Image (tube, rainbow, N blue to C red; front, top):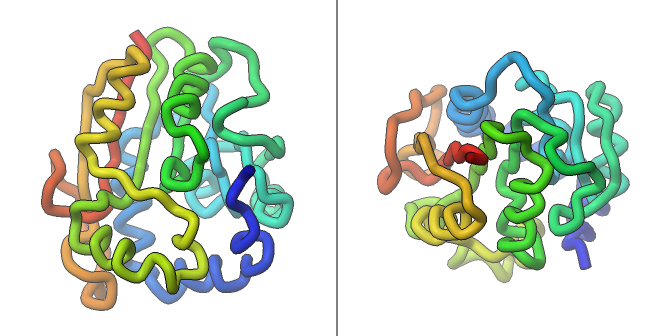
Length: 210
C-alpha cells in the first residue's frame, strides 16, 4: 500500500520544510538540475507537490497521494495517480524519468526501477536523488525515524545499494553528484554540488537505458 497518509494529512508542514530549509532545497535542486536537460519528454515518479518538477520544467508526474497531486496540478503539472511499481505509461514513453527521495517510500524498489527502465526510451536517462543512509543527515534521519512524521515508514539506502539496484535492471550509471555538506541547521547558503559520493548527504545518480 502507498505510504501516503502523512503527506495527505500534512501538506502544509511538508511545504513549510522547504521554506524553512531554503538553502538545502536550493542546493538539492541545483544538483538534480545538473542531470535534467531542457529538451525531451520528461516525467517524475513520486512528483509530490511539484517542488522539484515545476522548476525543472518537468510537466508530467505520477503520485499516489491525491492531496499532493492536487497541489502539483496547481503548479502546472499533469499528474496521474499511481504507484512506482506499476507506472501508468506505455513502454519507451520518456527521454528522462526523475525520482527524488521517492525510492525510500516504495514497497518494492527493484520493481520500481524495472518500471522506470520499461518506460524509458533507448538512450533515455533515469535520475535518482536520495538521502544516503551512510551520510551525516541520513544517520540523523534513521536515528529519529520513529519520531518523524514523514520518515517513519521510509527505508533508507546507501549509494552502493542503489547503484547495485540500477545495474541489476540493466542500466548504465554515467554520473553521480552530491550536495548538502554538514547538518541541515548549519546550511545557510546554497552549496555547490561535487562529483562522486561519500561526503554529501544528498546524492544524485544518472543512469542510461542502453
